[in-house]
Length: 74
Image (cartoon, rainbow, N blue to C red):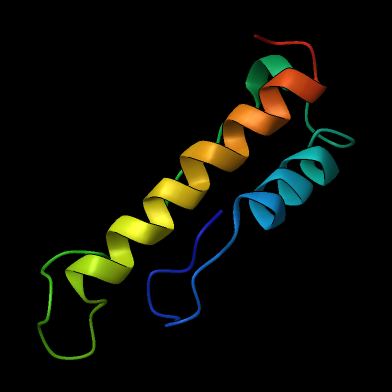
């Protein structure tokens, strides 16, 4: 749901849309959202800054909540 290398911060709405698209192909009971690995270590080499990583994680959590409501899971 999020790209740890990209400096672009996903929005809750973009995560929501990705989850709804995935739900067309993956049964919702098997669908989950996660951050791609790569956030750690922070500020090492080309890794993502801590503040950006936290914003990306927040967007994923909020977007997942929106998708859960739309899909009738909460």
